[in-house]
Length: 99
Image (cartoon, rainbow, N blue to C red; front, side, top):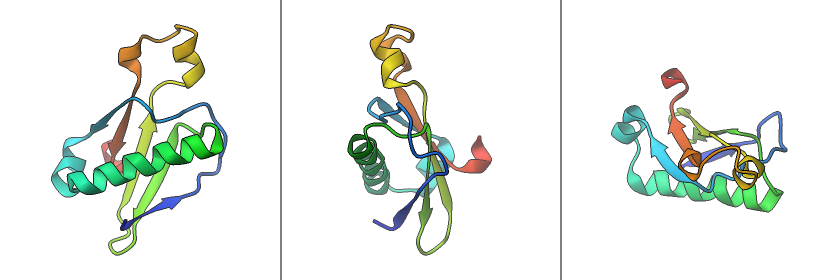
């Protein structure tokens, strides 16, 4: 994978990146579906490995140094508690300038 995971300042959280994946128009125009799947799978695996991670994760392309953010919307506990309906369980892949 040409996208390298950047360890965030805040490592722990209750975000699992297990919901629906949404890519912005900018991301969809510049990054292949194969790369998007790889990023989504990698961030989900990191959440599983660490028992949850922070809501904001970052990847940097090894050649272009282009940055991608992945932002999860709700915590696992808020979904389990019923604080959010299942349709709120999604994460977004975007460029920082699209935030």
